[in-house]
Image (cartoon, rainbow, N blue to C red; front, top):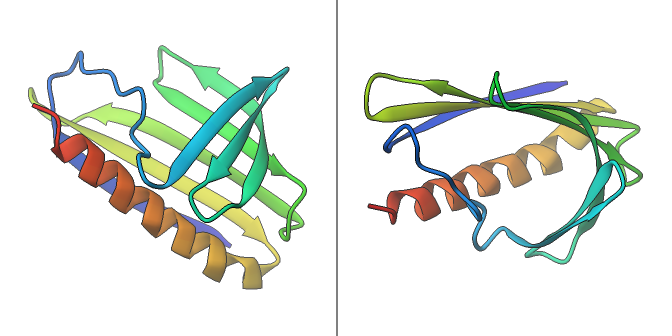
Length: 121
């Protein structure tokens, strides 16, 4: 079941964000072709990096293990005028019942990202 969310923020086009997930993600580690993500709620997830395209400003990962039999997500950043950007976050999960708890985490992630980025000049 796809979960689609969009969020945007005013920012200079060259702004870089090193920890947009403050309060939601507490740690990340790279291990080979994956990153290990520790969330504030204690959940630890291995996310295999499928695509990292700097030119398209796009990241795709597939979560390995956990409650879902399938879980992948893509993030892509688009310009939105001279002083804004838009993030498109798409998550696909199976079974469909997993969409509820994962969708709640997506909403928490968006809220954390928005709060973090809105604090920046």
